[in-house]
Length: 256
Image (cartoon, rainbow, N blue to C red):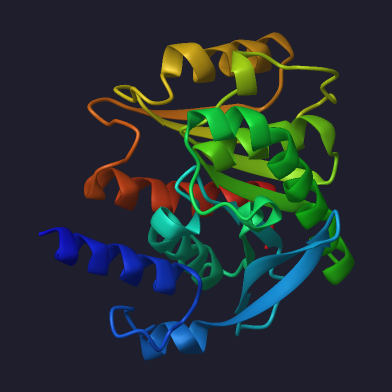
């Protein structure tokens, strides 16, 4: 049993870091290959090379840029679902940048004590990723961000500070430390909050509700999708639901 579990973990790791020759990695279907291409590119954050998986739609058009940010599981554990997010957005016509922001601290996955210590560094890395994307895409005045869990907190923090953020979809996130710290630009960009009402890891009452109250008080544009019976990790039916919702939200606020 232990050996089998170890094999699964290693397969997840090699798939997450992009070693497609590993037998446990699922091949990308031909239809998806025709819809977009995927390249591995790098940018620098405080002198450290950061990997980004870049999904470029094959269809003609503007392809507005969207960052995809994993959670505390890093690309090791969150990678497969984050890649599904990236593929869905790329098929919808967005240019997608899946940022391996844990590269900045050489982290594979993060527990609570590490989160509290390294979050400011990862937030800076996300900011550097936005600057890099804007240099790569001078035709795009705004960048969208999808973030899951830790990545959702980082997305909200970047949106509070950076007027280049055009829209945020935050799944299982909220205000870091449950409240805004420091100045917040106004107005904030449109934000879609996706959250399970039974989330015990990132409780709605502690993290999402303070953000909702702030957005209401400042008349900032936002939408919520709160899922009864869902926890931190959504079920397959809920995931199918939110995939369509985030594409529709970004299409309205970071226009194609």
